[in-house]
Length: 567
Ligand code: FAD
Image (cartoon, rainbow, N blue to C red; front, top):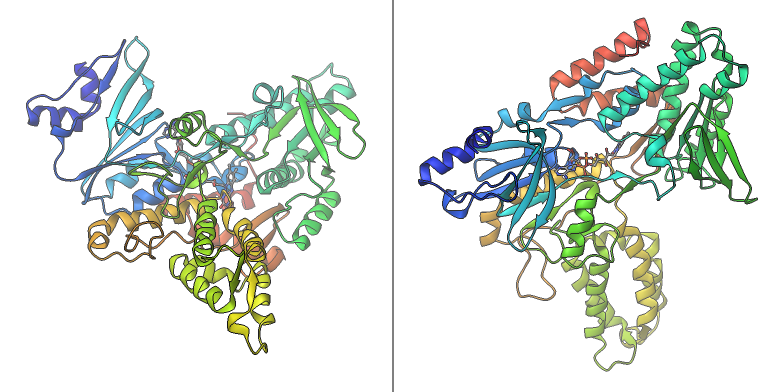
């Protein structure tokens, strides 16, 4: 017991000061780390996760106002956009990680870190149950419970296998630093193995068949990095086996990079074809064994079994079990992702916020509210509304939901605007009746545009920053609320809702060429975008140490090539 509390000095200090707090044993080792008598006036904020969302929240939070405890199984922040570069040694793993304690060190006030994973969120009692990844003595893992006043859930997501048999066991994910390091080792393994004597040509070919599943930005970037690594470095080091190498990119949809502009998709597909990367579209993986990967062709229904040397699985993200269990407890079992409102508060929970990949803003609720406004306006239940009333309703909606105002300009609002336009020139336009169902259909098109924020670092970082700013101004905004009018309660919301600002996205395609899609659908592809990519990613590093390391890795790669040692 004593030893465990030494591991958490802030708690032991609090115990000493208060003359003894509540300490409980559950089973072997489970500590209740705090109770209300141990706290000073400051509210305790628990941050779960040290990824993009959690770190951005932490960096922007005025930590003098709160008692902050960060909990994560990973004691560092990782710059994920450069993970594909780590898989082949274009940059080194340590260059893109920043110890979380370096970030905490720069914060004033009371900020602590516990290296542990949260396995249960108890919203009713405002506690999180955690398990340390460190072994405590010989008795296994340490478990403990931490109280919170505010909980910030930023646990990210896990790789989604779509329950495809064999994926967990036989493929590599590309999500964490360790994944990238394992892939790097495995690529070299495949080459060393193929180079051994006594292998048939067929065996060499199979060993050097690299399969990438998923034609999204991550899969495409990995395939491009791997191609460059083999083309620029490994083919010189393994000249006898280089002709056996094959890279296959499998995509279930009709095109790769289908969230990008058509010009980028076409350019990428043509470039990969020139590079000899075999892009198989409409090809769904149905099984992976230790030696073969089975795919089903969408057009013909044929199933192929293809031998491979290594498979990298990159088909999107799924919900972590701890979040799934939490969702069941709070009545969100029917949803796929944890739902929050536009202030990032988890639906149905007081003082719990969720951001980044583990949550999504429930725009359905916004649309329900809008429908309620229409219903109120249609007093006689006629299913129609006058133009004059519609204008009033729209003003009301825009006042409460500023984002709708934004979408008034959007093409999906054309129907509504057209209805208003239609009535122009009509002498009696103020009293012209409009069909509410048609208006609702137009609004549901807006809904589908609004609800899908992409699961990206950009969104996560902006949400972290937004939430920290809200926390910093909690007292001020309690007195002078600055948000829009509430629909169900009186008065205004405390804060303005979260608004995402899209800054554009990149898709590196190898050979010093990158595709960039910037706001306003401005597209740039080629070498100049590659330099833009270098500058943006260098500038976005979280510390000067990372920036210098990443830039020097790029320089080293230009001069000496990538390191092919199997470490
Ligand atoms: P994460 O960054 O994944 O962080 C989650 C944190 O929670 C981690 O610290 C984790 O250790 C911790 N955690 C996990 N389980 C628990 C638990 N039980 N208890 C406590 N803590 C826990 N986005 C872009 O915008 N641009 C890109 O170019 C880009 N490239 C990418 C390339 C790759 C290879 C990958 C994998 C992702 C890329 N993304 C990119 C997406 C981006 O990384 C994610 O959207 C972003 O990381 C989400 O941030 P997050 O904080 O929600 O989750």
